[in-house]
Length: 289
Image 1 (cartoon, rainbow, N blue to C red):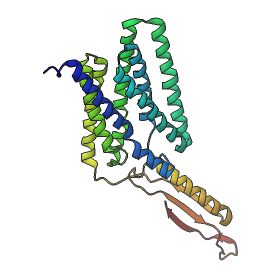
Image 2: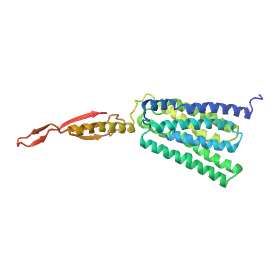
Image 3: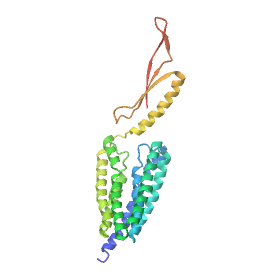
Image 4: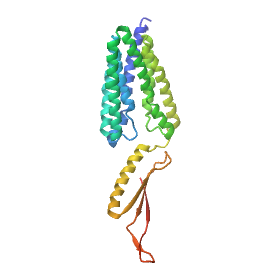
């Protein structure tokens, strides 16, 4: 059939790739709704969104150099806007440490690395050579985008819980990798096709983990435990000043234990011993956070 030409099939795969990629960009919406609702980033990290933003901007540069790449330009413009919004929300509700880390990532990737790549390729290369260099760089960072969830996969295995690995995102990533693989293959652009083989592999791996641990108990992550412990210590410290409490705080040794402990020792009840000296009557109190 006349319709089943490589160009037409590439167009269809490109449209489907744009649609599925758009859904991939929207997949974290429940996560950020949760962040806004709880006014805390909890155990979520900004690394995937920082890397995804850099990859989208890099592919925009590649698309402009390539020319006649409307499919790449449209989805990466949309992706850049969405990822920027996510990072703004993350910065609003993140802890001070997480904000500093996110700012460093943005400066490193989106200002430093991107600026160096653009300047380097314009000064030291031209034409097809410039396109080839940028294409290889795009392929490498596409692998980074697909590899970014590896940290989440490690956490799933460690905590035996899929709370921080949304299943819909895994599905969309897998479908997205399939569409862009065939698009790159049909237009003979292997800088697009090759990284998506790895993307498909990681997507399948995430779905397998979800099938294994989907009924796992939700865990309170160490970062959340630390914040809860600090809040509890602050409250007990106030009592210490008023009632002479001695405060000893400690985290559980087992990583899957979701309780933190505040041990307080009251010294306000003084009694006299047989020699008439004032002695301290100790009272142990254990508070579960």
